[in-house]
Image (cartoon, rainbow, N blue to C red):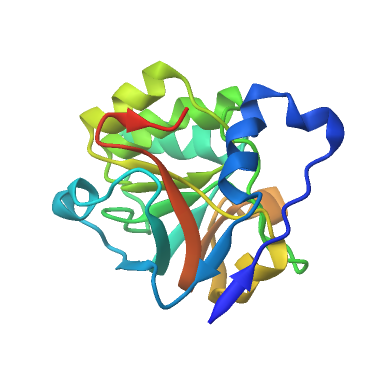
Length: 200
């Protein structure tokens, strides 16, 4: 099965270094579901060590969501060793809100989001799914805690179709930007930072 992604970026975004690598990744991107690497959460260190830059993945299992407001709150709870009702060990975080219209990642290099990547990796998150280039500091943190950063295709309909079940499990007061638990099947993404290497 093939899925041909027609990736259009606004003209004023093309020359922005934050997005230009995402453009390269998906401009002529064809998802061949029969040839992509399938992974399932929870993931362990060996799963991450076996990944390479530009690997095209299909992710199944449980992932969580969070954006600017929720992720710093989640980090704060973890750093204070507050017991959570969710198990993030070996799981993933997708930088998105969850609405009736679906899901689509926001820019991961926003200060509130990017600053959470290292601490969340330290506490067990193995996969961060977003878009945009990350700093050298964050790359080092991902390597230190053996986690990876993936970019998902910018096609909300495709990503939304991968959701089997969704439930807001933390920070319900934030509405669609709360922390949702998603059960996903074959969510596509490309490896952009892993094992000390980066496309950025």
